[in-house]
Length: 74
Image (cartoon, rainbow, N blue to C red):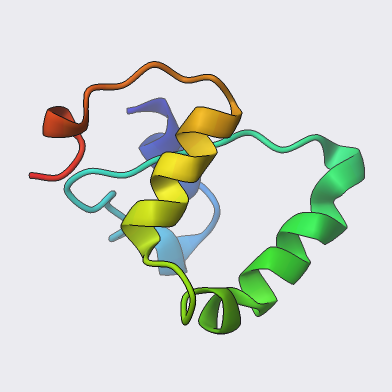
């Protein structure tokens, strides 16, 4: 709820913002912002070698986030 309110408060063009059914959010160290920008720029390239699902599981594992896969993909 808080993130939706934050996004909607960013300006009139965001008034219809809603999260899709199911999502993952990761915080980023401000000093690593450029890495995130490069990651986004290269998504098409690295999604040719691994699926979104594979990548998402890799993120969860790399940050040692416990999960049950039956609750991730609905």
